[in-house]
Length: 415
Image (cartoon, rainbow, N blue to C red; front, side, top):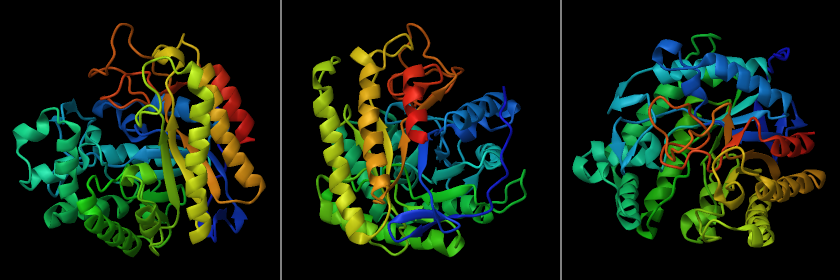
C-alpha cells in the first residue's frame, strides 16, 4: 500500500559547527546508497521504471530511510577497464550532453520531495563503472582507446587515473558537466536544482583518490577549485568530497584533514570496505566478525577525531558486507552482515546521544525489488539494476527488500 506523501520540506540542510541542521534544529539521518535511482526515474521509453522507483521509495519511507545517495552523471559509453559501464551517458563526448539521465533525476527528486527525503548527488566517479576520470583522460589523449578499454592491472589503473588531476582539459570538461547539472531546472517541479531543498549536498565525485602520492598536490588543488566553483553556482547546498578516509590516501591523515579544512567543503565522509581492503580472505569470515566490527569502529573513531578537530560533521557514507559464506542469493542468511551493520549503526547512535560529529549513515546499497539471476554472477543488459554496479557480483552487497532481519535493524536505529 502506498503511504501518504508528506508535505515537502522547504528548508535546506545546513551546518552549524559540527552538526547538520534544518531550520536550526539538528538533522540526523538513516540513509542508503541508491546510485541507480535516476536511471529508474527515466521515462519507460528510455529504459526507466518509474513504477518500481515509486514502490521502492514508499518502501524506504516506511522503513525509516530519509536520505539517498545517488549518481548524477555518466561519462561516455562502451567498455572501460574491461567493464561495460552503466548507461545512459550524460556527457556523451566532451561538451556533448544528453539530458535523459537528468530527466530521470528530475523524477527522482520530485518523488523524494513528496516524501521529505534528502539527496546527496555525486558528480563523477573515480571508478570505471560510470566512465568517470578514466573517461576524461581518454578523451584528452592521455591514454589510448585500446588501453583504457581493456582490463587494467591495479598499478596501471592508478597511474592512468592520477593523470586526471594534472590534465587541464579534463578538469575543464568536468566543470562543464558540473555546471550543466547544478544549473538545471527540474522539468517536473520547475525548480532550479540550486533552489531545491530536496538536495542536501553536491559531492565532487564518488571516492576520488589521488591514486599516486605524486598527484597529492594536484589532487588537493582540484578539490579546492571544484568546491569553490560549485559554491559559485549554488549558495544553498552543502558540498562534500565523497572521500573514503585514510584508506584512499595510503594512510595519509594529514592530507585527509587538509582537504576537509577547505572553507567550501562543508562536511567529511568516510567509506568502510572490509572485503575490498583485504580485512578478510576467502569466503568464510564467520570467525572474524568481531574483528571486522572492531576494525570498522576503530576506522570511524580515527576520522571522528579529525571531524571534531576541524568542527565539521561526519557521515559514514558507504559500508557493506557480503551475505554469510559470501553467498549472493536472497535465501542466504545475512546474520553476519546484520551484526556488522549493528556495530556501525551503534557508533552513529552513540555519537548522536553525545551530540557528537556523526550526522548520518548511508549503507551500501539498496537493491530494492531486484534479485540476482540464478546461475549468473554478473549483470547483463536487460537485467534489473541493483545495489551492486555491473562490475561486481550481483547480490554481493545489495540489501534487498526481503532481507527482513536487516530491515528490522534499520527500523530500530532509524527511530
